[in-house]
Amino acid sequence: MKKIQMTTPIVEMDGDEMTRILWKMIKDELILPFVDLKTEYYDLGLPNRDKTEDKVTVEAALATKKLGVGVKCATITPNAQRMDEYKLHQMWKSPNGTIRSTLDGTVFRTPITIPSIHPAVKFWKKPITIARHAYGDVYRDVEIIADEPGKAKLIFEGEDGKVEELLVHEFKGPGVLEAMHNTDKSIRSFAHSCFQYALSLKQSIWFATKDTISKKYDGRFKAIFEEVFAEYKDRFAEAGIEYFYTLIDDAVARVMRSEGGFIWACKNYDGDVMSDMVSTAFGSLAMMTSVLVSPDGKYEYEAAHGTVTRHYYKYLQGEETSTNPIATIFAWSGAFRKRGEMDNLPELQNYADQLEGACFDTLNDGLATKDLVGLMEGITPTQLSSAQFLKAIRERLEKRLA
Ligand code: NAP
Ligand code: MG
Image: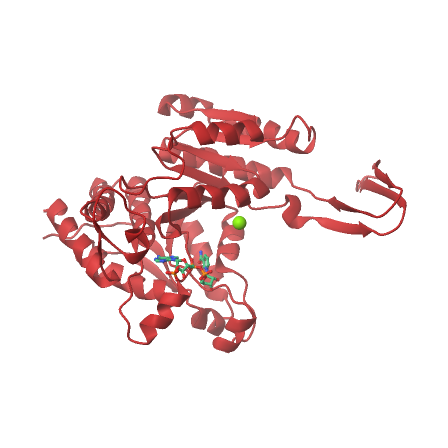
């Protein structure tokens, strides 16, 4: 069989632990036999990040900015225990944080749904993608504990000398106070990423705040989204999708009663809370993909889960694990589809569709990894190891591509 050709490379970011093992297995079984793979390879495994003083992460992020499409394996975010385990020179920052800030991007998480796994919410028929604004609000707050009576004030001193001062509260006894901020620039980038991705998926986008209460702060989010949307309005109409704004409590109620099939853009805190709710309601973390989209339309694909450490320790003891590779495969298929779209390579786009189709065929035939076996209804699933599961997907992919 003639291999599918690529023109521009994809930025390939290798990672850690069990997902690093799966990464190689996926390439060997499902990619290299079919695609004349072109990647720019960056080893983001923790030992190499430590060796390069984390420069490799910055280089990978810049390469993604340049080439437009990246795919990333899960990586360890070091903590004190990892410092010991890997004898690190420094507690390197989260690679995802570095990549996100370099690309100024927004993360979109989408569940991969199959007929035999029913969402906890019975109305949901299609996936709901959550976009979380990743800057500011309470995540960059300052807080004070007022342990005696006194006045709390909010003061802004402009560089040109303008001063605005507001009384927050006159405390008669102990209490707490907090101030937070956001920037027009960050909100605008968030809005661009959201509208870009909505066009890319051809799905409508919802956004919600509490601007009836927070008239200036949340009102600013609403106004910037409206302003940015003006640039996308015609393209949305052409694609037959819409931008829908409502209050956050109304949004939550509507999401629960919806069929799904849209993108839900959330402020930082709302996204933190709602993404855990939505992903749990859809079933399994191992079936959740994640894509970082920059305001100028660069894409970095990955699985939403981590390096699955517990399975890796078993693997090191020679045990065959049943770790689910689906979200990592979908990171690759997402990257191939986007690369194909950008480079006008229909064969590569078709390969991405068939790869995902082969995963669905396998799952719909009742072949699954351990995490899914307990969730499947209406069929009697057979539990496979990761290696057996990938072989089953390969057989079906070969049939589809023949
Ligand atoms: P995790 O790797 O997502 O795993 C948590 C648990 O979820 C696993 O122990 C496993 O449960 C289940 N699970 C997750 N993915 C699975 C899969 N593909 N197949 C089967 N089961 C799966 O999270 P963690 O253990 O909290 O974090 C491990 C490391 O990953 C940490 O060092 C963290 O820094 C890193 N991390 C990286 C990213 C990223 O790169 N984007 C994201 C999150 C975490 P059972 O053990 O019960 O089977
Ligand atoms: Mg959270």
